[in-house]
Length: 426
Image (cartoon, rainbow, N blue to C red; front, side, top):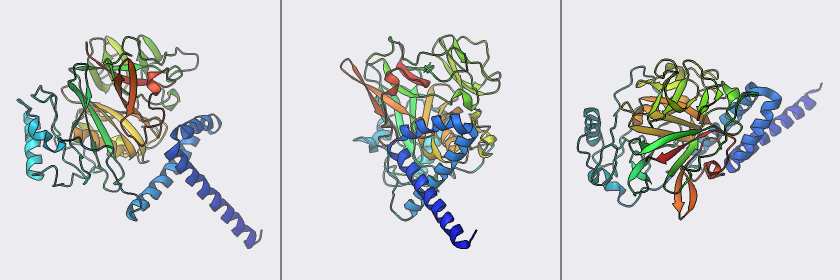
């Protein structure tokens, strides 16, 4: 084989790889649903490991490309939404009568570090530093106030307007705020990593889980219906929907709803359990969560990310096995997670692009998660919508205008994949 032929072959292969990765980048950006469908088809041909390796290569190319674009000033980070009018004075207006001592200490620390949340941006802690005993994080307790339900604002990591400031987001049928949202910019190496956080007042809402019509399921096993029950699919009752967890093939993590056990529980797996009386618990199956509980539903998904206030050290090991046989923890992609405060009064949903497992874990701790698990990953599958009522019609408004705009109403109809939804309490 002569040198000229080898050079031509290498050039063709190089051009082919560039075209492939560039094409994959555009598909994930413009039509993430097409990429998700292609991955599902490829899984039947090259298996989970092959798809994971291919996805890792594509996401690594995407990460390198965007980081370089950031350095050159071609792409700039931007807030996923704009602060509402009057948001600058929100902290002064929302007076919490009896905050917890830890929350008071945190508020005092923030006041000293950032005299003005609008004009001064103090840098946040290193979000990727390992910490088996992390510094104290506020354990917020929802309290009735003259202006509604509130939480202490979070010290921002970056310089985007509105970062760390809780914004009224979801209201119940009486117009009272039951859900807040904010965003953080926690990765100093990736300013485009924006993590949205939605916090729910569990005294006013209920968490529910729906098995998909196709997933999770084992061969020959029972299947769910993939539908929000009719009694909850009503304007004012249905408040929000968001994605479930991995496919059964990615770990066979247990899933049950309304008495249907689609996948048997896995001992020591991170689990979110919903009791029939409306309580929610997140913890380790067989330790924190007893198999014999009076549950309406439960869903497992990999190991705990945060457990009893501490970050799981396995977050840093990059293991595909630990995190569901899909992607290792160091790969940056869309990720979502679910967490709860120490007093079980605040439920947190977190999601965002270009996120590694360490960043997800540290962000959970920063906002006040005491126990938290990973949900789904990758574009298209990570999804959250606030459900708004227009007369007798329901409308799904995505949390991210970019990244969650594809099929935003997917959970208002029958879904092949499992999902959670938030409903107003009786």
